[in-house]
Image (cartoon, rainbow, N blue to C red; front, side, top):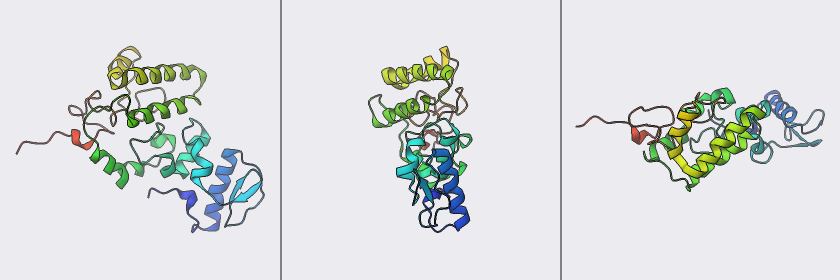
Length: 214
C-alpha cells in the first residue's frame, strides 16, 4: 500500500508513536517526553499532529539516514510513486517502498507519457535536475563534484548529453545502478536517448514498447 504512513491517525498507539519517535529523532526536533495519540509528533519541544507535508518534505531529497526514513514513512509526499517527481533517490535501497513502482499513480504516469525526450526547458526535465541538485548537496564531498558536473550539463544540453556522460564518466544515467549513488533513471524523461524502444527497461514509458504487427 502506498500511503504516507505517518498521516494515518487510526494506527494503534504504539505504532503511531514508534513512527513519530523515529522521525522526531531523525529530524532532531527536540524532546517532548511521551506525547498523546492525537499529537504524537515532537516538534521543537511541542507535541503536535503528524504532517508529512509540513515536517518531512524538506528531508525527502537528502542522501542520509534522515532522508531514508522520510521516504519510508512519507512515500507519497516525497514522490516515490511518481516517476516524474523531483525525487531522484527513489530506489527501494533509498527508502521508497518497492510497491510504489506498481501503484496506480506510477503505472498511470508511465502509460500517459509519450516515447519522446522531454525538452530541456520542460517542467519534467527541470524537476529532475532540481531534484538531483537537492540530493547532491548531501553527498560526500568527493561525489558532490561529479553530481554538479552532471546537473550542469543536463541543464545546458538536456537529454542529448546522456551519451557523452555515459561515455566519458562511465556512468549510465538510464539504469538504477548506473552511478555511484542510485539515482532515478532518466528513461522516463529521456526515453529516446535511453533507447527505450530498442531496450525497454525500468522507467521507460509504456508507449515505447514494441508491438507486434497485426
